Structure formats: C-alpha cells, structure tokens
Image (cartoon, one colour):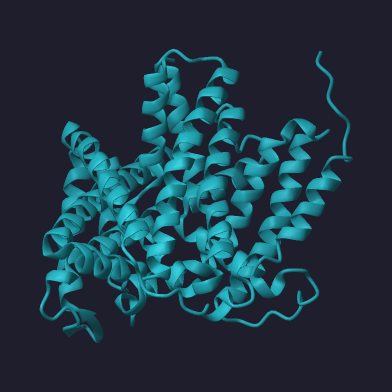
Length: 435
C-alpha cells in the first residue's frame, strides 16, 4: 500500500469510531471531573481510544476469527449481544437523540412540552422528531445506494474541520475557571473516566470494524496476515491521534464551560451552548446540520449492519423485515430521552465491556498461552462472572458478597480476578507443537 492508501485507511478508521454520539461524553465528563480532569481524561482515553484500536489489531492478528476459540453458542451469544447493544438497544436510538438535542432543541421555542398517549407521557417534539428521523433511516436502510456513501465522504471532512475549529477556540479563547470535581470524580477520577469511556461502545464496535477493515485490505490485494496487521497498526495510530485530539479538546471545553454548562444533564447541551456563545447562530446552524446528517448516516449504518447480521443468523426473516423492525424499535427506545438512555445503558455496558476487553487482551497475547482454547474460555468466563455483579451494582442493587474484591467499590471488580486468570492460563495445558 502507498502512503496515500495508508493515510486514507487511517482517516476512514477515524471516521468509523468518531460517531456524532461520541461528542457528548467528553464535555460532560470534563465538567464533572473539574480539577481532576487530567486523571479522568487519561482513564477515558484508555477505553475510548486505546482499547478500540488494540481491538482492531487483535482482530487482524486473529485473521478476523476473534471468537474462534469460544464454544459456538457462546460466540453467537456474544456477537448477538454486541450487535443488539451497538444497534437497536442503545447506539442507534442514541444517534437520533443526539441529533435531536443538537440539531433540533436549540431552535424549538418549547422543547419540553409533553402529551399523554395510552397512559404514558411523551415529549411531543422528541416523539415527532424520532418518528421522522427513524422513518428516514428505515427508507435509506431499505434502499441503500451511493448517496449515503457520498454524503459520508463530504460530512466527515466538514465535521473534522468543525472539531479542529472548536479545539482551537477552546485553546485560545479564555474560558471559565475549572471547578471542583463532582461525585465519583472526587476520589476515583481515573477509574470513573475509564468507566465513562464504556459509553462510546467503541471497544465493542472494534470487533466488528476490524473484520470490515480486513475485508477492505483483502480487496486491495493485501492477503498476508502480517502485512494486514502492519497496515492496520499504522491506520490505528492515525485514528488514535485524531480521536485523542478531539476528546482532549472536548474535555477542556466541558471543564471550562462555566455557566454555559449550568443545568446540563448531557454533553450535547454543553456543546451546543458553547458553540452558540462563541460562534453565534450561524455556528449553531452549521453544527446542528452536520451533526444531524452524521447521526443519520451512522444510524443507517447501524441498522443495515444489524439487519445483515441477523438475516445471516436467521434467514427466516428478510433483510427488509429486519431493517423495518430495528428502525421501529430504535424510534421507540429513543423516546426515553438521552440522559435516561445513557443511564439505562450503563449496567449493560458494565456487564459486557469486561468480556470484550478480556477477549481483546487474550487474543493479543494468545501465542503465549499453552492452551489458547482454555485461556479464552476461562478468562472470558471470569470477566463475565464479575462483570455481571458490576452491572448489578451499577443498576442500583447492593451486592455485599464481593465487598472483599479489590476495585469492587469503583465498579471494576472484574479487573484483578480476570488478570489472575490470564496469568494462571500461561501455565495451564501443553504447548501444541507443529506437525
């Protein structure tokens, strides 16, 4: 591959991970972390930049078969769980809600007006917006064409230019004084930032993106696994640099937003208020337009990918039927609201993320294990076991049985047991010799 090809692959990888939804988490975390922003930012960058890109490398190393050492049932269940999470359960509805918060709310005179339908209270503007947004998503998913690709190619550079302008304004335009840390950011800023990075869902997505990128490399004639890994690492470093630049600037934006962040329950509000304050109405219009279209293309990609996956898994239903179903489900879930959706997703992510991280790590160092199959199954089982209890705790239930486990109080009870199982797996089983 030429240098231009490698740069193109790097920017494409960057665009894969930088969904518009990811823009809402760093500002809010920066605001909450305050003076402890540096530690929180480090933790966030590990899970939102480092692990996803390591995940890509692990997929390349495994030749796209990252779940090959798991039982068929377990591999299928994990894949289904990941697709549901990054699809209709959380990520797809979130795109619609981010588009609503940034693209519609700033222009509404009464965005909090509600109505009661069948005994349930709905936000009127949010309900109408979600129906229209996911109606368009459904149509574009049913009739995919080059229009969406072309829009994406135009939008990504514009979004990058906007983010660079935003970052420069954060650096050169004086903001408010950084405030005191709030909540868990007071004593556990590093681990809280680490857990906040779960919300991007990018480590989960990297397991799917990795296979897609490998397919693209193969189409370019790169068949050798070592070469695939080499080019993917280069692309990953380019993407990592871009993601880190964006996230760091957005952390600073949130931490120095001052009164602009007053009363905000998500980063979308902070981002919109900042842009309106610094760049006026035209800045708000440009941001809302680009973010809305970016969210739309992301949502179509998610619905299409999930429809393809489940159509292959269960061909009893057609791709079109899955696309309609997932669009309707996404529109329905979107009406819980952005802050509520993020809150609901936390226990699920606390459960599944340890498994994804463990899978990436055991794959990356797989050659060190005498028995790779045992190592994969044992390490992931331990990560899932303790991850379930972290998830239960995050859901608000008290679990005192594991109070003795290090980091349990911080929602990371899985770390030490999973690490110990990885170490133990280095000495279990016999190394298979080549025949």
